[in-house]
Length: 333
Image (cartoon, rainbow, N blue to C red; front, side, top):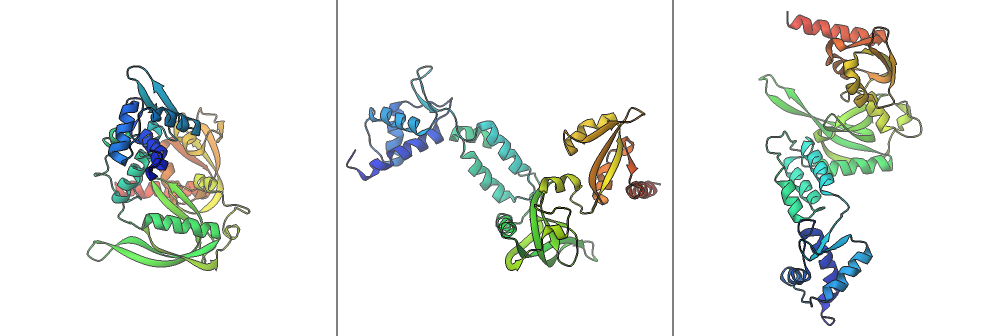
């Protein structure tokens, strides 16, 4: 064995065998390990040498357990990702509408490689994406990488943006426009992935769905600093921005007071966090005070709760909700 060139690869192949073919339910003894080395990798070795190799891999840091019952042998007890964690990742990828069906399957296959082949097969049987709406934009991986690079480099990007419009025959057609933008952040919100950026023609932020972006080109032109178009001065706070932006509509941040039914405590805490500014109202409801962007997205979010939320202030937002409610009521008269 020592004279064979493949001998140096033996430990690497044995490591791969433990990662791919063993877990708590699949234990391999020294005879089975030598057989796999021979059959799958063309490495011939003595059964006794396996024990020394297993010890080396254990010293290296692999959590290899030796068992005596119900079967003598070895298995890899822990990995960087446990089966439950891999399940969470695959579920998240399945639920992401902005990833195409083909790339969804490819990404899930990569994620499943974090567990044994038997665990992966069990997880894969629970993967269902055929009936889910998935975007058809195959550029999305490359666009995300390019946008992330531009953000880190502080450069503007030139891109094409597609939106659907109804033509005269009431058929949905794509309308493509080109933009030169200063990119600041990538945010996943409401099951979509967005680029937060500035169009140099305006002094505000815009949110662009990444699944509608094509042909991203990083330019040599420095990006406009976000402090010129937002409240952030030293760093762009993506988490804070997302918490204030409803349905990814941009708008002017203002202090908003909402009176909420106690039935909505779960929804409010889920949306604004455990440290949301809450206080008791005289009528048994509770009051919420938060900084929010005033826009149609916020109005729609408030109205989904019907009469269980009342806008106390500002008056402009209260009027926006009232006007929309009146338009909806008029539609059903």
